[in-house]
Amino acid sequence: MFDSPFDAVDFAGMRLRNRFALAPMTRVSAEANGRANEAMVDHYVRYAKGGFGLLITEGIYPDQAASQGYEHQPGLADALQTESWVPIVKAVHAADSKIIAQIMHAGAQLQYNRYVEQPIGLSEQTPVATPLGLYGDQEAWYEPKPMTETDFDQVMNGFLGAIRNAQAAGFDGVELHGANGYLLHEMLSTYFNTREDKFGGSLEKRAKFILDLVKSAREMVDDDFVIGIRLSQITITDQDYQWPEGEQGFRWLVESLAEAGIDFIHTTDISVDRVALRDSDKSLAQVVREAGVALIVNGGINEDNIEQIAEAYPDALMALGKAALADPAFVRKVQGEEPVEQLDFAMLQPIANVENEMRWRAEQKDA
Ligand SMILES: Cc1cc2nc3c(=O)[nH]c(=O)nc-3n(C[C@H](O)[C@H](O)[C@H](O)COP(=O)(O)O)c2cc1C
Image 1 (cartoon, rainbow, N blue to C red):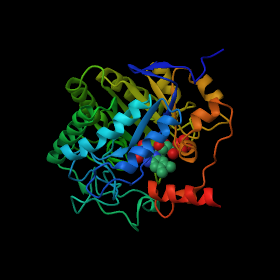
Image 2: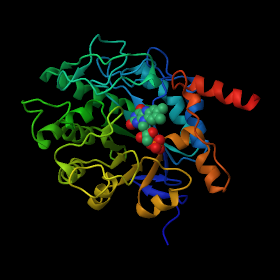
Image 3: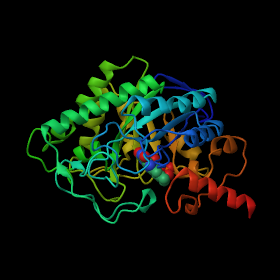
């Protein structure tokens, strides 16, 4: 027998009422100036009331330079943006869930930025394929400016400032977005990172900025403030990317992050159990599990496979993206053995904001 995923757990220092997490999902619904708003309070509270023990926010930009990637993306870069999150955090806590802010620097994967003209990246390399229509109209990627040492310093200060702001806003912690092709992922990726200076080359060099960031953040925040990271091999437009260092490199990174003071690692993939790494027969999640680091698994979790995944990863949280989007009351309904709603992408058209979702839901009710 294994513990039910509906039972309360201690995870990375947080007491959670169950093992279900809302996966981070960009909803491009903030004010143009990056402040969170009333619609976002209602949006997040739905998931807390729907039973998710932990909510991870959409990717939030950390600085008023090149980090914003989408129009109407929220920020945690100044005092007013920080304050704007307080009603969300309070309402989620009042509904008995914890909430973690995902901090995301767009890097080369930038579709819109109100502060700068050009993205920054590890090199001039643009992402593969084309930008996602889900987040706004953009036909081709902008060519990024390769980062200087000053840029690296500014990005570091931006992340640390946003983490400090997240703590001030009352969040239970942060998740650094090191997955899906955004800046921290680009550092690790040999597709983007072709540098020959101290930030490029071996995996040790490619990971140094991230490890330094985790160490500095850990020293800066209170002991009970959670610092996690999300990791993947895939990006939003490239499901085939694998770094050359395979499973061995991933194990080294996981162990190094643990030494640096990371509280959890959140793996994301097309499915939780997919073999993602070169020279491996394991999923990303299995490698993290073997290293004994607190784990959030993500990718393709739904009402039909939660038991199997809960059993395979007995101490892990399960983060749900599309299944949660389809039905914010997923957890409550599955626990009560009620049927859940299935995802219809029409709710995210023409772009994936909350307003379009609500309009679509109202139309379904009327129909
Ligand atoms: C509309 C939408 C927005 C997303 N935005 C983010 C994001 O801001 N940060 C992130 O790490 N992942 C983001 N994702 C990826 C999800 O967190 C998740 O990893 C992905 O949907 C796969 O999990 P699932 O099969 O449970 O949906 C997004 C996914 C969707 C569908």
